[in-house]
Structures are given as structure tokens and as C-alpha cells.
Length: 449
Image 1 (cartoon, rainbow, N blue to C red):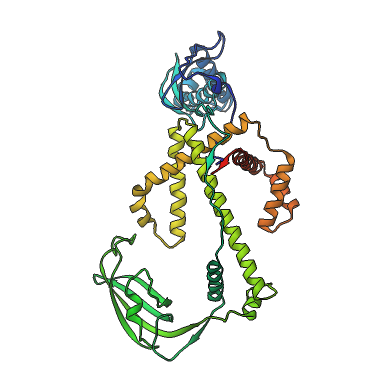
Image 2 (tube, rainbow, N blue to C red; image 1 turned 180 degrees about the horizontal axis):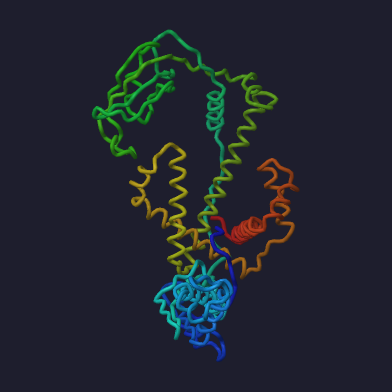
């Protein structure tokens, strides 16, 4: 949640209905400030004639030695000819310079910290005056109502014997072997086949050497049952209706034919639950040791899940008790970022950009709600860190370097050197560690129900 930076400045102390008067006499720009929409300030900026003419003078003085005009030698072009020949260039350059100088000045003068590049409106420019409006998106005012004493339920962790046995079965699946058989295929076997999926006389999908497990619980209902009895060398047409839930609407709910060419039938052979399985699985003394380690893994996984659920419930309480306005521009940008992330994941998993675009607007509300939650929480964590004086000290960073060294299998010194050489990454890491400390503070001061 590092998509904005916390800045304590004049804007945090500024009442929302405040309207500032002009800057002090003699200042190069005239600046007025008023409220805009939610989390928005509007600057009205004026630049007077003297300043504008000075900028024109600076521009013409800079180009005079190198100005090229037919009939004149460089550096010898009369001033009135330069002005006539370069009028458009001068106007564009002066306007750009005045905007780039006056806007930062006005922002500093009024103590604002924009969340994004300001939007400029109603630009009026002549040699007599420049005026424009800048719409500035700012942080919301955060008033903490309740941080300590939040209450949420944390599930008790219990691992049953049958859960351990299920883990053992999963382990057997991992270490299973496949044996080619001459007999007809049966449920539980794997059929290796080439196929093409035909819908309305059009080929939609073509696969070679695809492994198809014959099982009762499957996405394409009835597919496996039609392959029971096939042998290597057989051809088979599998007829079924595609699920309505398919993302490809050209396939969803339509009758399909899978034209199969069976290459091989393989039987899955699971290893016995014995000491040999414990040896295959890893560094375990015996089967009893394997079961105990699997139980410990299950306990840790469930503890992590319970912690995550407890943390989420606490966040829900925190958000409920501490309301704030959400900057709409930031919300739009964050929503698009989440949508783009989802799109990249979808494409990496075999989906197409076209299919994603078809569904994007249907799920936009979900992304917007998640973006709103992330932004709300990020502002609150920032404010809690400030209000409760939660800071990131050097030992906190050292511990983080050690944690990262374990994850990335690199010496902690290498990790630390990287961050010391990349200041932006270090700043992001500091934000992350600070947020983690704030979350631990919230949890330490919460009640488990």
C-alpha cells in the first residue's frame, strides 16, 4: 500500500472551507485557493504583465546570438525581425516556462502536497496577463476515532487425524507412477490423446498428447464416462454440451464434439503407505516422523489462515470506526491498476485479452471496492503511525534484511547492499516495515472474541 507518500504539511491543518487571499505584495504571482470537490483544492493563479514581458525579453535575448533569418547573418538580426520571425515559438516557450514556474510556486505557497499531477483548466494567455486554474487532489483529513480496543473473532486451530491422512494421500499422488496398459481404459486411468474441439462446424481448441484423467468429478460433465473402454489406437467422438459458465461466450452452453485419437492408456500406481514412502518424501526418520511433521505443517498453515482472517476482521472494524473521504482520482487510478494486474494474470494463465475485455466492466465494481478498501486502510495506517509515533528503526530494517535473505536465498549483506544502493526501493521497504509495525500494534491492542 505504497501508492502515495505521507506528508505532514500545511494542508493537514487547513479547514476545508478555508479560502486564502492573494500572496504578499511583490511576489511574482497572484495565487488564490478555494475548495473543490472531495479531497480537492483549486488554485487560481495569475501572472502580471511585467513578469510576462521579462520572460519574453529573456527568450529573445537567449536566441538573438543564434537566430537564423534569411538575409541576415547569425547574431546580426534586428530585434523587431527576431520578434516577428519567432513570435509563435516565443509565445509557446514563455507560456510553458511560466506554467512550470508558477504552479510549483503556488503549491508551495499554499502548503499543498498533490497526490497526482495537477489538472490545468481555463488557461488564458496574452502579453498582458496569464491566468489559469489548477485542480489539486490532496490527502483526506483523517480523524482517528478508535484504534485500540478493536474486537474480532480468531478461530481456534485443530487438526484432525483424517486431515493428516488426506495429506498422506496427497503425498502418495505426488510420488505415484504411471504404467502403460494394453487393457481398455477405466475410471482412474489417464488417457493420452490428440483431440480437436468442434462447435458449430468450427474448430475451437486443438491439443496434442493431452493427459486426460478419467474421473467422476470433472468440469466437463460426462467427458470421462465416454472414454471408459477406449484403447491405444482408438478414435472416439465425445459429445457433450459446454458449461454455461465458460468465459468464451462463443463456446458457452453449446453442443460440442471432441474428436479424439487415443495414443496410450496409463494406469496410476500409488505407492504404499510405509517406511519407503517416508524416505521418498524427504528427510524423515520413519513413517511416524512423517505423520508428525505433516501434522505440524497443517497446524502452521491453519494458524497462518486464522491469523490472516483475524487480521482482516480487525481491518473491517478499523475501517468501520474510522471513516474518511476517498480521493476520486486516486480511486480511479488504483482501480485501473488492479484491473491491469488481473488482466496480466488472466493472460498468463492462457486467457486472451479479448475475453478479458468482454468481462472487465462486469467485474469493475469488485475492483473498485477493493481499491477503495486499500486506499482507506493505507491512509489510516499512515495516520496511526504518525499519531502513535510508530517509527522504523535500524534494527527493524536489519531484521527485514534477514527475513528477505531467507526468502531469496541470498546473504543478508547482499540484500542490505541492494537497498542501500537503491534509495526508492529502500523507502518502499521502510513503508512496508512501518505498516507491518502498525498492524502489529493494532493486533496487540485488540481483543480476541
